[in-house]
Length: 295
Image (cartoon, rainbow, N blue to C red; front, side, top):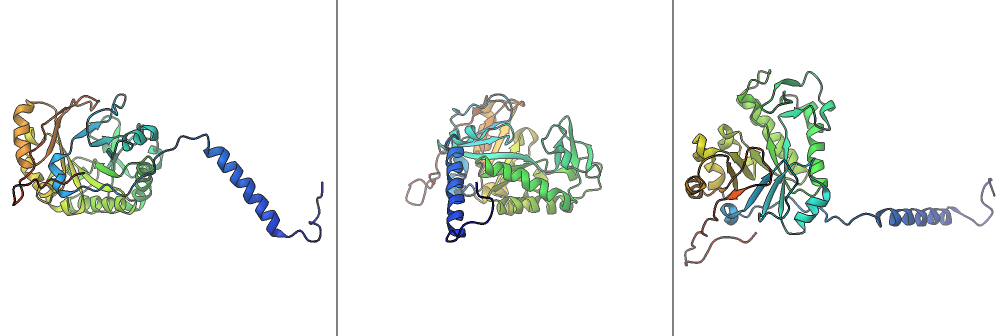
């Protein structure tokens, strides 16, 4: 074996070629054993004419049922596997990941990235803590990685959860403007990472935030008598994905159909079960034809 310099006539180019061929062999061997996953697409589009016609599913617990007849799936990006998202995207389903932005859970994989002085009082869910949304310098890299996980698994949109800490006893002196600034920053961050941003809850700020978000996710606006406050989304042709946990669908569906929402009934556990409201009839055009736009 020669240890010294190469003999005369043997330059760098042949050695570089040899290393390239070796690298290609290793890459081919490694990736040849992996399942092919459909690459993520561009940020999810929401055609205005389709806003009230989306069939949607929201599942955060239990084995994921990918056979549900829905166009839009709102899922946990940590629990959902790349194989599951690939199966759904292979059937042209739109995928929305739910990401906690204003709170974190002790069981989150990245919980240790939150400094003690950023965590506040107990959140709305057991085992969670509100965060100081004024600390964008600390929160931005953490949230960016959460959003990158969504993109890496094939999601094209994100619903921002726990985006209303200012309205709760967080342990911090947060006000309305603090929350607006933070929510807009996260929406802009999502867009920069090719995700369509959606607002989950935070109904009191809908009028101010509707221009910054592409869709809304709402819980129980009929029971709480808040549906009219979501009209800035519906009037702009943006989807409102609405869920009720109690009541008679034959009654609340009539209400939300009039508002132009896509409504379902779910159990609070948000498992696979759902009962969807009937689709709204397409709005007639000037010549009597439908104005609905295909997805």
